[in-house]
Image 1: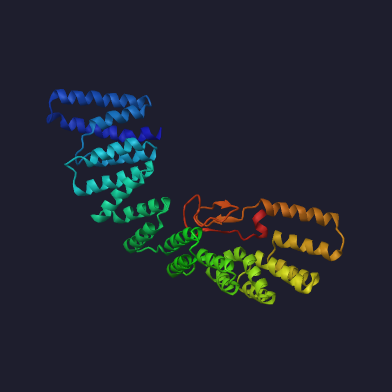
Image 2: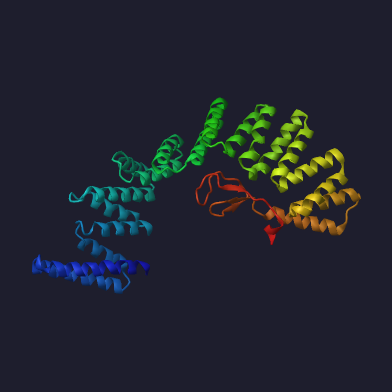
Length: 387
């Protein structure tokens, strides 16, 4: 029904054009157009917009007064998913010799979007590159090219075009470019080219010093090579880049410190970070280390002091576990409470997109819903999460 309301202004405009042209055209031509006009109105009234459209297009001769109408119809076809019809309409426009340069480039831009919608990326790419060459709609064309190269996983081209887009729009693309270098690095990891991986990740950090993904990948690479000291350096910088990702590297940091024989150093690191940025995961790991080094009572005292300030279901679950351990016997009520909290924790999502709100249990560097890069982050659980 919305489509009908869109076509009604076109029908009114056509009627006005017909009345204007009576003095310029033969009576026979005017009569033919009038018949077609009333036929199209009849289709609209009977809610047959597709048939009305075909009549309108036949009546709309391409000239300076109707180009915008053709472009609007083509855009509408594309949004409705009728891409073939949009392509034919825009191709017909471009073939007209009487278009001025602005109208032609606008039609090229629309046709490029049609091709993208149809999945004909090579054709869309060609049109957008043509627009960039003639400096017409460059910013929009560059934006669409970046999307194409992302979807096609042509990361080198994506980097080149993103750099051009950054120069043209004056808006930073550092996050996206850094992610493209990380994608290239992941490809080299699969091909077992560690030196090239390091080179690409360093490029990522050059563009975006806060690129957590690059630091984590470099740390993983160092761990695989048993370079635990170097891995600690890479993982330790994550809390400065984005403290929300600390929980993702804590187990790896722990492994590296154990290999280096420095559990005390790990405890000092956790204590330092907790002073600047509280995290339930940091608290729980530090509590576990205190328990291992000093016993249950000091660990419970530490947890109790932290939970009074930062209450959380995970922290409470750990307190219950320590209580059971220290009592040397299982209390049925505590066991039931602990199992309930475990189920609550098991069912919750672990990651959330800061852009669109997408939630999931796996980390995605590019959000599956809104396609933004580096916006999916670990959920920091608090008592309010379950309220």
